[in-house]
Length: 236
Image (cartoon, rainbow, N blue to C red):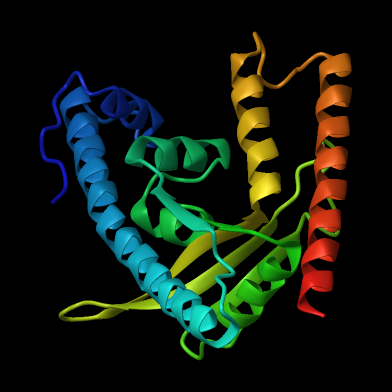
């Protein structure tokens, strides 16, 4: 158990207790139901943490092999994160789904996430190809925001992959979101995210600022393409 220090003042308990379907339940019953769910969601983090370790290990091995066979690494660095129980619960509520672990596993694909930062655009698709070649890993969904950028200029390759995780008494197939982008794409996305959350209304950035951010994204994309071209020429 990752966390058993849950009390009546825990903000999540209030969220979950209010979201219960059984309106005629006593507060004590709703509180206990909420507390049980919170603990279950903390236990769920163990499963997703294990899935991240499985994929990161695969990527580290592939990166080391690539360095040996091609004298360079296609992965600059990697980051990972797991949604908190509160974040998972709030996402289920936004989807108008009953709050339980089964819905979390089945309906939320990004509880666990890995971000892979690559030097060059071609490296992104190399990593994708290497992941697809793993016989115990399945790409179940793909959205290419590099070939088809978002309206705000965001670029990245998003994959939802399913990986088996073996425990002492059972096996779990776990979904993990994998985002693959270049150093330049990550630079823009990170700063755009910071600026958006500094705005008075994060969902309504002034149009002139949005245009400037989009122009920056397009400029960075052109630099990415130029650096890829220079890299290719160096290999000739």
